[in-house]
Image (cartoon, rainbow, N blue to C red; front, side, top):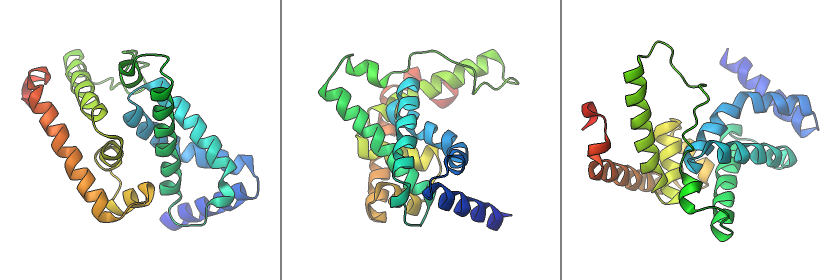
Length: 199
């Protein structure tokens, strides 16, 4: 089964490199959720994440001829994270809104991630914890934020993260360690905001 999936992806990549929009759209369908989740955690805002994903897929399509093998997922996530940081840097240089607006969620919930078996109190606690964790992620330097999101949110291996950020394994491990310490310290400093069971 895994071999057929890999062959299908390999075939889709080859067809996309030959200009097939349909094949590229299949690749987008395969990775759009992962790309959006990474962009959302890095950007901290749904609208910005959606914009970054759209731009990333457009860049990937235009750059398909540059993909030379290896993990397509890592290649694509490198484009996504670089696009996120390009947008963050651009907004810092040309602030139309406050920096707080760039990293804070609007509070709108479109219901896509709702668990309908969940009690309202459980959902409220989960949302509060998620908001606090996102605040902790937002305060990290960009390099640490990326490795934390890729490791602890998306569960990529150290090797995959090294490929995404184009850095050695030792760099990945040290950035991840520093990021986890900073998140832990942030949560300890704000433990009154944690739901009771996590204090």
